[in-house]
Amino acid sequence: MDMDVLSDVCQSLRLHSDLYFTAELSNGFCVRVPAEGDRIRFHLVLHGRCKLKQDDGTPPIDLSEGDLVLVPNGKAHILCDRDGQAVMELQDAMAQGFDHKAGILRNSTADAPDARLLCGFCAFDEAIRHPGLSLLADHIVFRAGNGTHVGAGLATMIAELAENQRAGWRASLARLVEVLVLELLSAQVISDDLPSGVLAGLKDVRIARSLSAIHSSPEENWTADMLASAAGMSRTRFVLRFKECLGIAPIQYLQDWRMARARTLLRESNLSMDEIALRSGYQSMPAFSRRFKQRFGEGPGTFRRGLRKRLAP
Image (cartoon, helix red, strand yellow):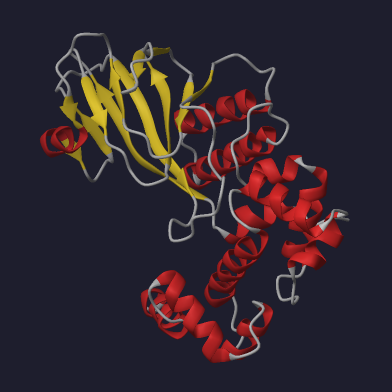
């Protein structure tokens, strides 16, 4: 069986999600959510209605009870109940009405809010910039009651968890959001409009073979000729097509993936430094340490010690 490259990428880059807060908003609200790295923010409408607006001038998106919207790539956006409202920055709204203990953001003392939203995020390990791992659309909406799509079914399950809040609901909700994002990434492979990146590479059967080879054996002493042979292409044609799909040369992708792999092994295994260096394609510890520090700003030993210090009681 070919290596499942997308699963390998997502597992190694530690896709994770969490909640920010529940927002209870009333009396003409308009809150700007700032840009934040590469995070995929989500908002689930638990009660009432609201609009989502973006800075690109596109018409606002109307959201109703049960709808879930994803805003990828850390893009800034606005949540409001109607057009024409004065915009309040999220940090100012939180300074005025955030209940840390309850995890609730309120902009009013009204007993019954006009809209109640569950807000959170999903993200990969932001220290690793893997080419092309982003959701393509500016926003993706899953409408309540539309069970014809896997994502819509997951959105319904997320809404039920958020409303019932049984024991363990936050952890279950976070996992469902991660599954939802993975489903969307997988669906992009058959999309007609893919920018350069690993998803475009997986769509090309020949380039997908070379990616599978890299991910199956990152420690192998791969050359462009060897990878071209795995793809069933000439070296020149392979290098050009790989760069067209992924945006970088095949050997650069190999080096970047080895570093991502090393980071995972340092974090999740008790293997020695020498063994991790070998499994990451480096025959000498100095070469491995030098490359790791160049990539992440600290050596592998420092990285591992920092992790253990944070995890210590």
